[in-house]
Amino acid sequence: MKLLRQGKSSASGNPSQSMRTTTGNGIDTSRTIHFTFDGRRYAAHPGDTLASALLANGVRLAGRSFKYHRPRGILSAGAEEPNALVELRTGARREPNSRATVTELFDGLEAASQNRWPSLAMDALGINGVFSPVFTAGFYYKTFMWPAAFWEKVYEPMIRRAAGLGRAADEADPDIYEKATTFCDVLVVGTGPAGLAAALTAGRTGARVLVCEQDSLPGGRLRAEHGEIGGMPGWQWAEQAMDELRQMPEVRIMTRTCVFGTYDGGTYGALERVADHVPTPAPDQPRQRLWRIVARHAIVATGGIERPIVFPNNDRPGIMLAGAVRTYINRFGVTPGQRAIVYTNNDDGLRTARDLHRAGATVAAIVDARTTETPLARDMAQLTGAKLFMGGAIADTYGRLGIHAAVIREHSGLTQRVPCDLVAMSGGWNPELSLTTHQRTKPVYDETLCAFVPGTMPAGMRSAGGGGPARGPPPRPPAPGAPAARPPRGPPMGR
Image (cartoon, rainbow, N blue to C red):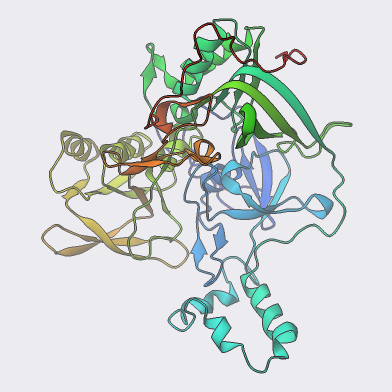
């Protein structure tokens, strides 16, 4: 897989998708669309997110930190993104603090960075970082106490301008929003391999199944990996499973729908983004719809969230989660860097070295915090030609608006500086178990995973896949001969 070098963009004078590779299972490379970021026009493809399109065009700087205005880049590829918060659209539809990693791109999208002045690259308040030893936690409560009359008129407005994020729209929202209720026998949250398997199993019995996926495409991590299911790439198996589900009359599939809450009586809250992925909703079409879902059973298959690794200056643009790097390479056909260091404490992170190598990037080093060499670490180093540092760590990083080099500390204590423009880090994975904790049910710590997993589950709920198996006693079965509880059937769900 080679990096595409497409020359210059006639609209902006910037390299056009210089980091785009030849493949990506979630984008349509036969069509080109355009968007603007901070007034500059860039090219992209249908299926891109704003984050993947920025990375494809070589844009690593996406924002500034809240307090010190340090440069911030794209860290993740999903809803957990903490850095790349941007303003979308203009006028009455202006929407602040939107995550670039889950913003679906459409032709003509206008996006802008926030929390900077006069520009993202030259932010005057970046000087705050120089004085960070003075700006300790709560310093303003001790510093701005006198004179008291200055607080409302001088101090507070100044602090809010320095620390504020996006700007809300000044005009009334022109769009409409709806709320609705639906009923089902089985609610499946997530369309990764576990969620799709659960939906297929339930659907084949004739049960009324509702499948909710917050993404626009099914598959979850299957779209980020090279694995196979049934002799075919995982993402193709996911689409085949979705095709079978669509043929089942009692199965309804809702993409772009995030299940956010668990309530009494088998009730769940969900938000459907009906028209967030188009410039304007169609006439009489809501922009978003709030759903009240009443389900007899629920399968939580929401996967996991990768943990970062803590090291000095680990917030520079170009330092990303290893799983996110694989997502951009395999789903979006984007290589986030040309010379990378992979920093991990587990075998899963090592797979990023292989995918970077396949995408045409140079893997300069593999830093594994474990002291004992594993067969996979040795194989990845041989495959990529990278230098392997077992028992090593990244001691520091360098670069102003993006990482340029990292200092690697070997197990012996010696250090060396390695040039790079990307660090892919992995500290393992945490199950995404928030839906299992909304009814006074507490997670429990699993020492083998070094993570919390679901404890005793709410009534009618099960977890599957990366969400982790439930710990604790199983729910009490119904008494012999007792009729099964069943919610009101309500109107047919349709497809």
